[in-house]
Length: 154
Image 1 (cartoon, rainbow, N blue to C red):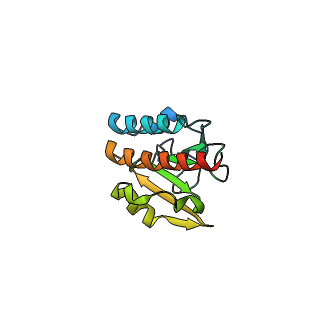
Image 2 (image 1 turned 90 degrees about the vertical axis):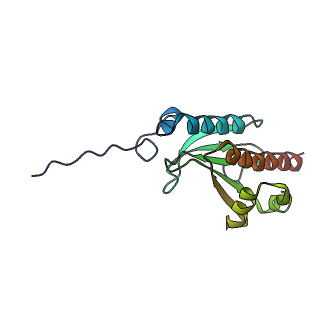
Image 3 (image 1 turned 180 degrees about the vertical axis):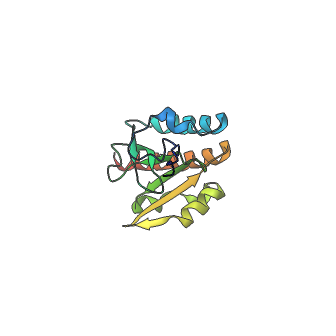
């Protein structure tokens, strides 16, 4: 009987073992890992932001989810450590979309918003980032979302 070959699974894809943040960054180069850390730091700098590691199913698998009291419907953002390239997913409530002032966002972010899926009136946009410029564009979108939500909650 042939011996079963044991396949190593990345912590990102092993549904049955909850990973650590560090193990989720393992497959990445130092440069990409730094970008992921910077994205985490930027998200956690938002007041009352909490981070969780959560299984999100295929294709996102294990992701860092960020929750804020200002937006209780879904996670405020998802940081998905996909070995093909990390991505930030940004759910945007339908009521906020019209107030984003998209014309002043970077072109890649405008394109991502245009291609985003609409689910129950909310926009689900996701953006891969492998450079500082790409990450900064998504962080600008998240900063606008934060400002709009803080204005609505006052």
